[in-house]
Amino acid sequence: MAIQKQAFLRKTVAAAAVAASLLGGLASVPTLSFAQDASAAAKAAADATAKAAKPNVVVLATGGTIAGAGASSVNSATYAAAKVPVDKLLAGLPELSNYANVKGEQVFQIASESFTNDNLVTLAKRVSQLVKQPDVDGIVVTHGTDTLAETAYFLSLTVHTDKPIVVIGSMRPGTALSADGALNLVDAVSVAGSQDAKGKGVFVTMNDEIQTARDVNKDVNIKTGAFQSQWGPLGMVVEGKNYWFRAPVKRHTNQSEFNIDSIDKLPQVDIVYAYGNVQPTAVNALVDSGAKAIIHAGTGNGSVADRMVKPLQDARGKGVLIVRASRVPYGFVLRNAEQPDDKYDWVVAHDMRPEKARILTMLALTKGAASTKDLQRMFWEY
Ligand code: ASP
Image (cartoon, rainbow, N blue to C red; front, top):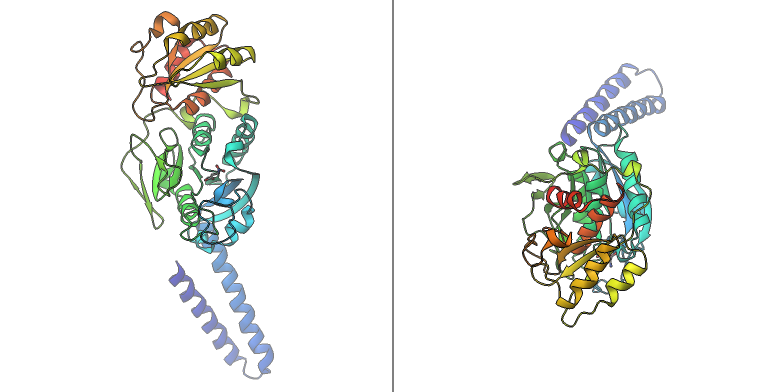
């Protein structure tokens, strides 16, 4: 494309020079300015053609380390997140224009550990509006890495589109040596604008890997290869080209029964963490504070301490949904194995981490008082 553009420009300038020589009787200054005008017009036309050939990607910025700044280049872990505005991030990366026409929008400027349910709803609604626009081909969300996987899963469950949505962050601020945000952002824009990513849902593309939002989690808190999935990435993005090896099999985006366009508020769902000597204090307090569901992050295969069974049964008796997840990052919780879920009317979170089980359970509750049968079906299907 660049070579064709240069050849086109050369031809246009040459044509202008011929025209100028034919007009030999005229003074040299107007002749030169005619050539310059023709050249400028040709360049503008070539630029417009190149722009029209590229996809349009909107970058929605929410903060995090990718917008962070440290005091010096050796500060890879000590820095302030959510400082650099999106326009500055994009202006520092002229490489983005190799892949797409990129526009930035600052949705929030926060560290992702401070994300709230309202932030999730606001962001997803904006993504949903944008993907409906014919002049938008893909979306990138820049995000802090701490809760990035939760937001990506939320978007994959609630935004109806076949346009690629890519959520990314960085593990090091842009001011640090070997900062990873720049390449993560370039990769994300290239994936968001690519045809072969369409219909495959929401991605997290960090460290050159293309991960599906459902499966990926932040598994390491200090390395650039922080985002992993126990089922493996879908593929890789290298120098603007996608290499696919798997496809998501669970319901997402267009096949989802949830739609952010009809969701304005998310219900209170909380997590209780299991550990040796755990006591029912947290469960009881959450029930009293109005939780509609409790995700129990159990030990092992979602095990529940003997003294916790009754308080959880009592909570269920009051209408609170109980979801058995595990604090163990890999594997999946088996129904009726560690606890008689059928008898207690509990649900298992399958392979969902407790924090992602919270996301799906909140969405289930937006449909009204979800039955445990329905919620269990959702954990198998999404
Ligand atoms: N605490 C930061 C955040 O989630 C970490 C990061 O972005 O990597 O916003």
